[in-house]
Image (cartoon, rainbow, N blue to C red; front, top):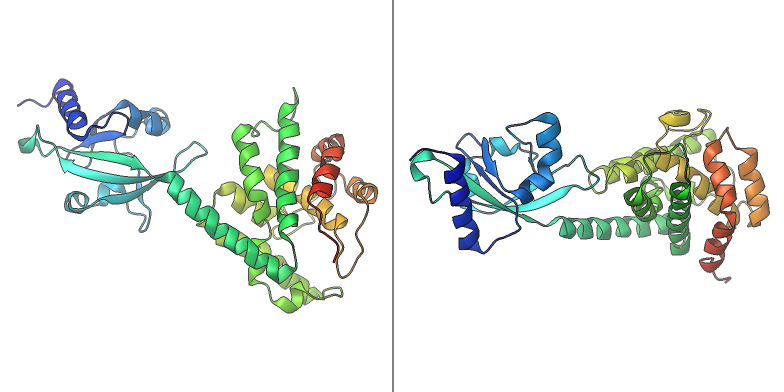
Length: 329
């Protein structure tokens, strides 16, 4: 039988009828794992790679071992369902459970097909639960409260949303997805403190130079922890939220646009909330005093554009702090 697109489409129709599948991505490939046909749901997910890079072999990675799809043996694919991980160019990464079969129409042609079942939401739920546990553990070490963590998320989301609402602004990367994400992951900024000794985190006096160097490691620790659990934004926030606009921050002395926007946003909201809170080494500052300190550091510590946007919605910051402030002991 001649292998034609029409033959393959007929085989696809048989597969869909046999498994009562209408919307799942399905791909046909040969023994060398060359994709010879895919349906529309498959194309919708992988179209960016197909159109921009014109692959015949699309890279899909085994989530546990990072094996190229093309290097997984046919027998392994046929023997049992496979969990595969695909890092898309879009903001979302995909996790699939894949069932692979020999094509009923082309036994002599060594053609196979895989049916993809997306389980990304399950993965995201597990990641969220794991990160929440880590955040809670870091709070216990740093004497931070759950309210502080929630305020950081809310401030960051409010600031990003305000910028997005402006007709003209210099941050084209902000969209609805960006706003949603920063409202979820900003609170992960200090998760790396879980690796810092307690005597440094809870020291009531000023840290020595050596102690401060150890404290600075929480940025790198956090990025390492989040690199396998969360997305790029969470990692960037953890790693870069102590960089300063003039290049005097840490850990890498980045400056201006070298610092990811999400980290520049969290730098402002983290300092604002820290100023409002009472610490062992300082009393709680008023909103006005906190704002004046941030204004003093405009263009040195903080992105001047972001400070201006922060000032425009400072009433929202007051409301967020007041609605989530700690109850006195």
